[in-house]
Image 1 (tube, rainbow, N blue to C red):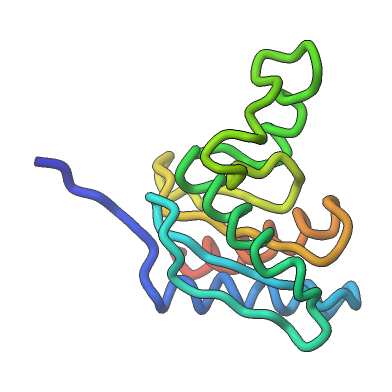
Image 2 (image 1 turned 180 degrees about the vertical axis):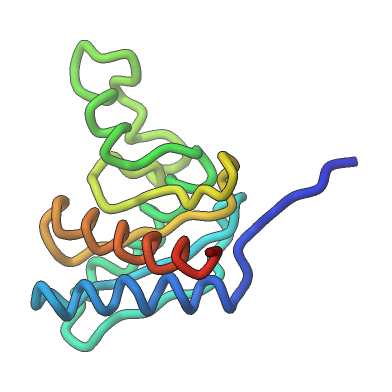
Length: 141
């Protein structure tokens, strides 16, 4: 039998709040999704002004980061022509994201969930996702 650590709703709230704060700081309203370690949605927020088209993208970024246990920008680099994972973006019905903004949430080296952010540039999305993780990790003291 396995013992699994995963994010809960309270953890998701902390991740959302940290991401929301960073998004407001940079002036880009975002869509923010939090998933558990298996890629199942726990919480989602579309800030006022967040792009409607970014709803699914944020959710799929978080899904990729948690279920595949790798940041989406890492898949982006590995999925280019000639790279080892070329074509992987079409995997899993197209849900596997290869654009920056999806990060796994790690605790003691284990993926406990993921955060996906969309509406800005990939660099902005990734910075907002990292801010959510930083806020969450600060609560673990």
